[in-house]
Length: 183
Image 1 (cartoon, rainbow, N blue to C red):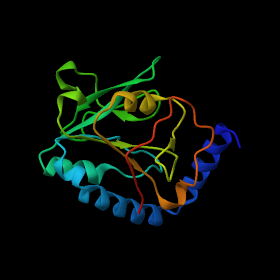
Image 2: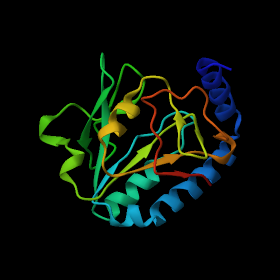
Image 3: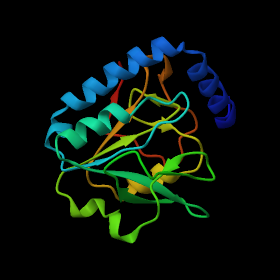
Image 4: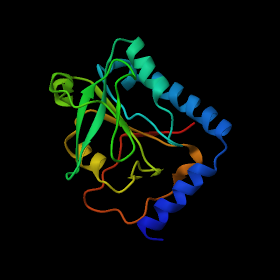
């Protein structure tokens, strides 16, 4: 299968998981993330705000806020493959992007430079991850571009049903995450 067929397959697979099963898996994933030494010691959590059938990240974000960690969400810069990160203190005031994702408003005063933090942890979404930490995302290249220069720890979130033996057709710009967490 080519990448588009794989994306279609994993979107359908993800959507076919019953909501109760997704919720149980997501709660277990959130608990494991929060128990990671890298989460406990991070001063910056770079998270994505899940939507649709993606792995729910709000409980992880709430746990980071409860631990007084800085939490930042990405804002995709359209026409590029880059993201800017903005500090968020609540789920209020987010705006829906043209991609359908809730993002923080563009506010230079709240922009975060991940390099300025000693211990940053980045949650990385994907349609599938393989056992080596490589992922297949939605095809925009935003996280591949970001991870290229990211010096912190990256964690892929993936339900066991979406875990692959090997992600197909890896390209030179594809990077693996440090950990993949499943339920």
